[in-house]
Structures are given as C-alpha cells and as structure tokens.
Length: 159
Image 1 (spheres, helix red, strand yellow):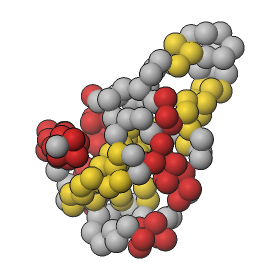
Image 2 (cartoon, rainbow, N blue to C red):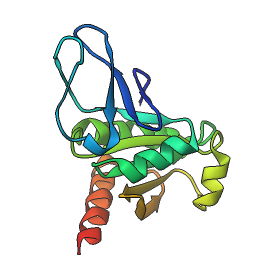
Image 3 (cartoon, one colour):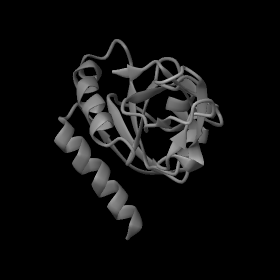
C-alpha cells in the first residue's frame, strides 16, 4: 500500500495532523525524531506506509538527506511479481516505522532515474543511506527476507 496522505517533496514529507488536519513538514534530516503539529502540538508519528516518489529530485533529497536508512521498492504497475511483493513491503514499512523510511519508485514514471541507477529487473529493493546505495536485491520475497536483506545491508555499511 502506498501512503497517499503523505506527500514527499525536495525538503521533506508533508503530512496532515491526525488531530486538526494541519499540514506539517517532516524534514528529512530529522526523520526518526519526534515532530509536533505546528498548530495544535499533537505528536506526529513516523510514516508507517511506503511513500510514493514522483520526481527524481525528491528521490535524491530523500536518499541523501534522510536521517533514517531508506528502503526503496522499484516497481511498475504491469509487473506481476511487483504486485505480489507490495503487501510485504507495506508490512515492512508498518513494522519498521521510525527505524526505516520506505519509498516506492515507479520505474515507468521515473525512467531516467531507473536508467541512471541501472535498474534492469523489477521488483528490485535498494537500501540507501547518506546518499549511497548500500545494496540491492531483485525478486519478490516475503517480509522476513526483506527485513534480513535491509538489516544486513545496513550492518555491512557500518563495518
């Protein structure tokens, strides 16, 4: 499932407060910290769903600036295995909220990005941290394998 209530732009995630509806920006370098609504001071929880990325500049901002590691699901609407892995990606996003930022990139919409990153097979998951791609894995796998892949990629980057 893709979160349509949170939009991503070059500076952060824009989310509506669940209490008053005020739109608030969660800036990438502070993801993982607590945010409060600017209007009513309600605490805003971290994204628990995958965020759809619609522009290359937003992808670059997220992967370069996010304080949280980013799991990217590269997919296309016509891809059967992509549809099979989508609920598993959604489970990972829900289970790992506040620890990971999960984004989805439609390779049909962002063909230039897919070419630049040499995405030749989908579904493909990539792990990004501080502007660097740490690892990638092709294929539709269950949430346990997604979690293992993501954690191993992050651990290997710290060694």
